Length: 149
Image (cartoon, rainbow, N blue to C red; front, side, top):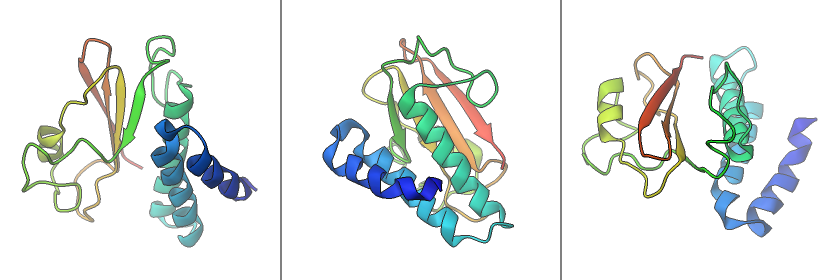
Protein backbone atom coordinates (compact mmCIF):
# COMPACT_ATOMS: atom_id res chain seq x y z
CA UNK A 1 0.00 0.00 0.00
CA UNK A 2 2.73 2.59 0.76
CA UNK A 3 4.05 2.12 -2.79
CA UNK A 4 0.73 3.49 -4.07
CA UNK A 5 1.88 6.85 -2.67
CA UNK A 6 4.84 6.99 -5.08
CA UNK A 7 2.93 8.65 -7.97
CA UNK A 8 1.73 11.38 -5.58
CA UNK A 9 5.25 11.83 -4.19
CA UNK A 10 6.67 12.07 -7.71
CA UNK A 11 4.08 14.68 -8.67
CA UNK A 12 4.79 16.66 -5.52
CA UNK A 13 8.53 16.43 -6.33
CA UNK A 14 7.79 17.96 -9.76
CA UNK A 15 5.15 20.51 -8.75
CA UNK A 16 5.89 21.21 -5.07
CA UNK A 17 8.56 23.33 -3.41
CA UNK A 18 11.93 22.86 -5.12
CA UNK A 19 13.51 22.64 -1.68
CA UNK A 20 12.27 19.04 -1.35
CA UNK A 21 12.18 17.87 -4.98
CA UNK A 22 15.47 15.97 -4.91
CA UNK A 23 14.73 14.29 -1.57
CA UNK A 24 11.21 13.25 -2.58
CA UNK A 25 12.54 11.80 -5.82
CA UNK A 26 15.20 9.96 -3.80
CA UNK A 27 12.48 8.50 -1.56
CA UNK A 28 10.63 7.34 -4.69
CA UNK A 29 13.80 5.70 -6.04
CA UNK A 30 14.23 3.93 -2.69
CA UNK A 31 10.65 2.63 -2.99
CA UNK A 32 11.47 1.35 -6.49
CA UNK A 33 14.66 -0.32 -5.28
CA UNK A 34 12.87 -1.79 -2.26
CA UNK A 35 10.29 -3.40 -4.55
CA UNK A 36 12.99 -4.76 -6.86
CA UNK A 37 14.99 -6.39 -4.05
CA UNK A 38 14.54 -9.78 -2.48
CA UNK A 39 12.67 -9.14 0.78
CA UNK A 40 15.04 -11.52 2.59
CA UNK A 41 18.00 -9.47 1.37
CA UNK A 42 19.54 -6.94 3.72
CA UNK A 43 19.68 -4.45 0.84
CA UNK A 44 15.90 -4.15 0.72
CA UNK A 45 15.81 -3.08 4.37
CA UNK A 46 18.52 -0.49 3.76
CA UNK A 47 16.23 1.23 1.24
CA UNK A 48 13.33 1.09 3.68
CA UNK A 49 15.53 2.61 6.40
CA UNK A 50 16.70 5.41 4.08
CA UNK A 51 13.10 6.19 3.05
CA UNK A 52 12.01 6.54 6.68
CA UNK A 53 15.14 8.48 7.65
CA UNK A 54 14.71 11.00 4.81
CA UNK A 55 10.98 11.34 5.50
CA UNK A 56 11.70 12.06 9.18
CA UNK A 57 14.39 14.61 8.26
CA UNK A 58 12.21 16.44 5.71
CA UNK A 59 9.24 16.52 8.11
CA UNK A 60 11.51 17.41 11.05
CA UNK A 61 10.09 14.54 13.12
CA UNK A 62 12.75 12.94 15.25
CA UNK A 63 12.71 10.60 18.21
CA UNK A 64 14.99 9.59 21.06
CA UNK A 65 16.24 6.42 19.34
CA UNK A 66 16.11 6.62 15.55
CA UNK A 67 17.62 10.09 15.15
CA UNK A 68 17.77 11.78 18.57
CA UNK A 69 17.45 15.45 17.63
CA UNK A 70 15.48 18.23 19.25
CA UNK A 71 12.66 19.08 16.85
CA UNK A 72 12.68 22.77 17.83
CA UNK A 73 16.41 23.09 17.11
CA UNK A 74 16.11 21.51 13.65
CA UNK A 75 12.68 22.79 12.58
CA UNK A 76 14.08 24.89 9.73
CA UNK A 77 17.06 22.71 8.84
CA UNK A 78 17.97 21.78 5.31
CA UNK A 79 18.49 18.15 4.33
CA UNK A 80 20.71 16.52 1.72
CA UNK A 81 21.34 13.00 0.46
CA UNK A 82 24.74 11.93 -0.91
CA UNK A 83 25.91 15.49 -1.57
CA UNK A 84 28.61 17.65 0.03
CA UNK A 85 31.15 14.88 -0.29
CA UNK A 86 34.30 14.23 -2.24
CA UNK A 87 34.95 17.88 -2.94
CA UNK A 88 37.94 18.09 -0.60
CA UNK A 89 39.64 15.00 -2.01
CA UNK A 90 38.75 14.11 -5.58
CA UNK A 91 40.20 10.62 -5.09
CA UNK A 92 37.62 9.61 -2.48
CA UNK A 93 33.92 9.36 -3.34
CA UNK A 94 30.90 7.43 -2.10
CA UNK A 95 31.44 4.99 -4.95
CA UNK A 96 35.11 4.07 -4.59
CA UNK A 97 35.70 4.42 -0.86
CA UNK A 98 35.76 1.50 1.60
CA UNK A 99 36.84 3.33 4.80
CA UNK A 100 34.71 5.32 7.26
CA UNK A 101 37.59 7.66 8.11
CA UNK A 102 38.11 8.56 4.44
CA UNK A 103 34.42 9.27 3.96
CA UNK A 104 34.25 11.47 7.06
CA UNK A 105 37.40 13.33 6.02
CA UNK A 106 35.93 14.21 2.63
CA UNK A 107 32.56 15.52 3.83
CA UNK A 108 32.46 19.22 3.06
CA UNK A 109 30.65 21.62 5.34
CA UNK A 110 27.27 22.82 4.00
CA UNK A 111 26.67 26.49 3.23
CA UNK A 112 24.08 27.05 5.96
CA UNK A 113 23.03 25.64 9.31
CA UNK A 114 21.30 23.72 10.74
CA UNK A 115 21.71 20.92 8.20
CA UNK A 116 21.29 17.14 8.09
CA UNK A 117 23.39 15.29 5.51
CA UNK A 118 22.56 11.64 4.87
CA UNK A 119 25.13 9.42 3.13
CA UNK A 120 24.75 5.95 1.73
CA UNK A 121 28.22 4.60 0.91
CA UNK A 122 28.02 2.84 -2.45
CA UNK A 123 31.05 0.54 -2.34
CA UNK A 124 30.18 -3.12 -1.71
CA UNK A 125 33.07 -3.48 0.77
CA UNK A 126 32.46 -0.28 2.74
CA UNK A 127 33.31 -1.00 6.37
CA UNK A 128 31.02 -0.96 9.38
CA UNK A 129 28.12 1.32 8.38
CA UNK A 130 25.39 1.21 5.73
CA UNK A 131 24.23 4.79 6.36
CA UNK A 132 26.06 7.75 7.89
CA UNK A 133 24.33 10.96 8.97
CA UNK A 134 26.18 14.21 9.61
CA UNK A 135 24.10 16.64 11.65
CA UNK A 136 25.19 20.29 11.85
CA UNK A 137 23.63 22.42 14.56
CA UNK A 138 23.03 26.19 14.26
CA UNK A 139 26.65 26.95 15.14
CA UNK A 140 28.00 24.49 12.55
CA UNK A 141 29.10 21.87 15.08
CA UNK A 142 28.92 18.44 13.47
CA UNK A 143 27.64 15.26 15.13
CA UNK A 144 27.91 11.94 13.28
CA UNK A 145 25.56 8.96 13.43
CA UNK A 146 26.32 5.61 11.85
CA UNK A 147 23.81 2.86 11.14
CA UNK A 148 24.61 -0.79 10.50
CA UNK A 149 21.53 -2.39 8.97
